[in-house]
Length: 614
Ligand code: GCB
Image 1 (cartoon, rainbow, N blue to C red):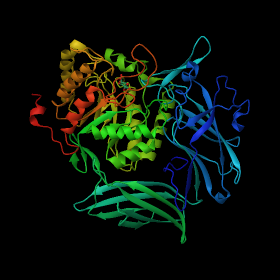
Image 2 (image 1 turned 30 degrees about the horizontal axis):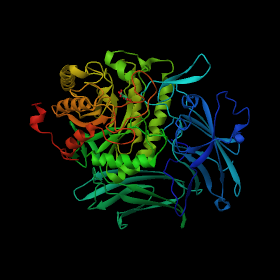
Image 3 (image 1 turned 135 degrees about the vertical axis):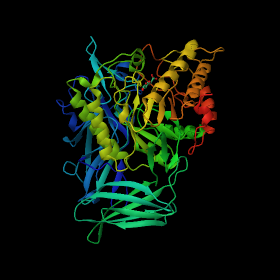
Image 4 (image 1 turned 30 degrees about the vertical axis):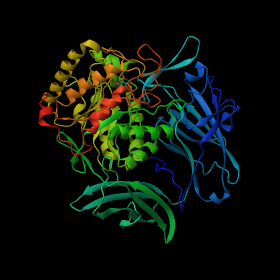
């Protein structure tokens, strides 16, 4: 059970939420002198940077961009005296990867994990009717005991450097909004919903976690604000007659207003946007509201010019417009839970989201995406430090599900990206993570993880835990790229035949496939890295997808080019984007658009012709 509520901030009759975003003081701390020098009271600098954003892409020197260690932020805020008697919190959407929070010099919170929210209770430390000082000490070092996994090395010149076991730049900072919250003494901590559909009605099962001794009233309002159902009590079922369901690319949202009373006094209120829908896996199909859905879309990143991994509402808007233009219906939040505003947008636009916990880099290699193709094995989960890693992983699963469980867009939990699964020691670790997700989710959504290339039908010891199977495959790129692509196709078909023979009888979704492509390169006949080759490789891969009826989705890697560390495998970043980092299309976008527009958002039955691979 989390020590604080993760409900998204809201201002209403009982609550106040004020954003503290803006220009914050900022200082690196390479000598780790902050505490000694009294920085928790305030920073001795005039440097300021924007919040939310990654700190790395503003400055012109490489030492700052590559910095690994502690770094500090400060902002002043004023607390109105009208808030006397309220419980006061600071809520951080995310601080990457760990944070210590000080209010007026007093430590008020510590959090590890860079992609999920946490709160600091400042009721005792804060001063009403005065200016207060908020200081955050953050740290971006990578370890094998936190997720995402990696190492931090020290160069001969004494400077530290991140060595991620993953393929995205180790951006860090206060990446999402910071809110100042004033909540009533008796408040709503959490709301959980689940749905059951009947012939002409829906049952909305709810539980409200709230202060003891209070009474709860609920009203469910339709999109016009008319009352669709109402109820009383902290637990119960609302019956909605003739409900409008939330559908893929056809969303419909209700608003659930939860009101808490102490006697006849209104104590607290919280309004949740929600969609009525069910998700389940039956046989080799993924069903939304009982109808099969074929996933079309992307693996993405939170990544854009200047902001880095910081929440960027302009990129959010553009990305959804592009995904709609493409005929997509889904995406995976590779490789970490995204900002809450992303899920709100997906709810409103009707996109399905595979929500991924930041468990990436669980394959000990600096180039795991490449090494996996060589059959390298690492026995990652058999280390002395594994129990500590598991704790961090379970904590992130808990925070992610607590935060995202009520979003209609969230159709599944992805509990790992490309872990090492060929060693027996992975099994107990996986079982605990999968069990925790099931226990915490009131909707019992499907659970899955993305399989790396060496997790094959013959070698993978964990795939049976997945409710549907997600494959990341790079045939035609890391495996037999270029003129060898015909062999790639043959090997790919062989692997798929192997999966069929393993008899898992469940849906398969490609959560990664594609190849690097420079938007500047054209060549006829094609060569790898040219736009022509990207199209050819996608055509080959799609041909294979269409040959197997248990393939129930394709999410190309990646939506857009994104920043990685420097190295011989990457040309200033990963260029597998269908769009450039500036969100303009490469040629492949038109190919995917034509294909996806020909596949309906729901109800697609793959044709028998395609199933036979003719
Ligand atoms: C993968 C990883 C992803 C990489 C991708 C690539 O398998 O999951 O993080 O970016 O391959 O492009 O190599």
